Amino acid sequence: MSKSIGFVQKRHNDIWLILSCVIAAVGIYGIVQVFLHGQEASYGVSREVPWGILIIGYSYFVGITLGTAVVGALAHVFKIEAFNIMSKKVALVSLSSLIAAFFIIFWDLGGPFKLQVLRLVVYFTEFKITSPIWWLVVLYASELPFLALEVYFLLSKKANSAFFASLIGSVLGLIAYGTMALVFDSNGSRVLWHTSSFALFFIISAIAGGFAVVLLMIFLNKSTKKYENGINALSKSLFFFLSFMLIIDFWNIVINAYTSDTELGATMKLFVGDGVLAHNFYYYEVLIGMVIPIILLVLGRFKSGFLGALAGILVLIGLFFARFDAIVGGQLLSRPSNEVGLIQHSYTVSTTELSLFICSLGIVGVVYFLGARFFNLQEEARHE
Image (tube, rainbow, N blue to C red; front, side, top):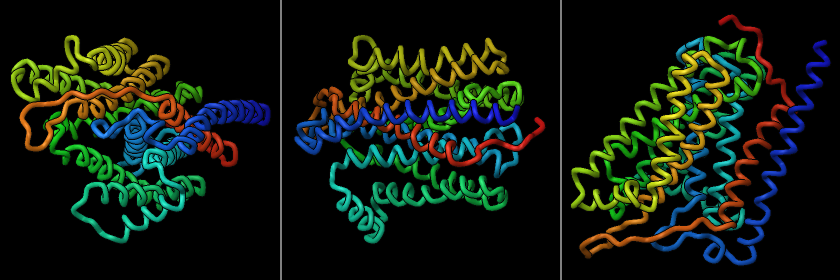
């Protein structure tokens, strides 16, 4: 019986792996376009809006890396048994997401492989400690081996080593993601990125994304009965972080109402009324990404695996649009040096950028399901 179950699981894994390869293959179009026409002609970014969906994708994937790493750290470091759920699979998702993030940032930088390696070496060796981007590169490049080590130690059943790898990896990830927010904050011409809640929202929403991913994984692995306590703890944690995010967005709207005659108020108008990002903000970021998931979690009394997974999917969709709104919205209005007032710009995602982003989604699946194909990711029996 166990052999037949293992065969079915292997077959399902192979189907997902093939599907992931198909999704990743979409990126061939974008890669060819970049090689034939270059970035400037292929991407929808401009001098005024230099950071588009590729940077958004990078932020999105490293956010998932941070969120899932935090869930793993809560189990390994703080011995919270309810979060000790599918630890091998969760660690592999963290690693897969970070690899996808590196892929998409590679194409955003747009240089050949040797140039990118040289650039990485230069960033490490020049020690530009006053540069947030230098810290960002160093921290994420340092986090990758610790995530890989955590997966290795978990597979090797070396609990103590996995503990230290998880601790160091999650700390590096948390600092790195905060540093990413600092990269935006340090840009003096972008008013939106200077709000006090910007960095906080970035980090809180990333952690919420981690809880959402694990809830979805439990349901897809048909483990809702096995991990009832875990679902309860994850659902309540996700509810807390979503509520926190909703409060932050509420006060951003209040700020808009009371600062309508300022540059910040003008920027916030992008997200309300007939603003160019109002639909994204209200329907995708707030309604789909926060309000509906909160309702689903409450309706399921924080115990429903299905409703928890559905809430997780919606949170992940909303999280992408939250990143889009924050990063693109921060660039649509800028204050040129030595001038008064704001200038409005526009950004439209190109098919090349979209294909590379879709490819990165496939890469997450390819790396994860390859790991599942060749390694034993089944957890030992636990009592919750």
